[in-house]
Image: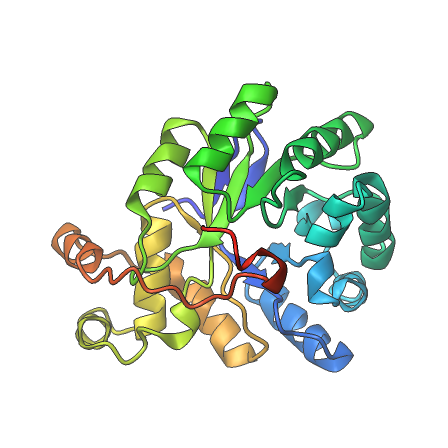
Length: 275
């Protein structure tokens, strides 16, 4: 199976990336990114809200991989949307990352009253050459429909919580029908299925870990995954998901373990809004 996917603007994106949420220390970040690039990762995902873009930028600079060989993603936070400071927030992210462009820039949450304007603003960044693709995070069908009504640019990516315990079938199908690449945040459900009987049995069958089963299930469906870890052993193990495939009957079984289980939090400033 190919380990990259073409986005709707013909940009090629790796299916596997390193999520850096909760990796904050300089040494921890350097160790994580070093292990990732050594294991073949070329997608690094961060966000201004993670407060680690500077550490990511320095670690990338020391990685030995040319900038053109990496796919770097960062995101626009809610506060900048409310202040209508989209261009300023983006420029600060570039400076912290020590790069003159990012491969993917995304709106992290659909802030009511703001996200439509934010979308038009980040789309305008495409014309500057400082962004290769634009996308969104945590957008539901109704949000995506609104974007469609105001813009001729379809998000290249929609990143949202996705894993076997919450398979989001309706949203995934909508994205596929509209040419939007799904990217799974929290693809390991923060450890939620690592002791699950189905995954343990399959791990034995395929001589791999439950985590590898869950990640392989997603990429085998063409969904990008960005598992977060600072442990080099886990980072290396996650890169092995392209070395095996899951049989069709087991893929069907994994579809049935869905529990609509959410493991990630909604930001405090959006908790009164239904998602």
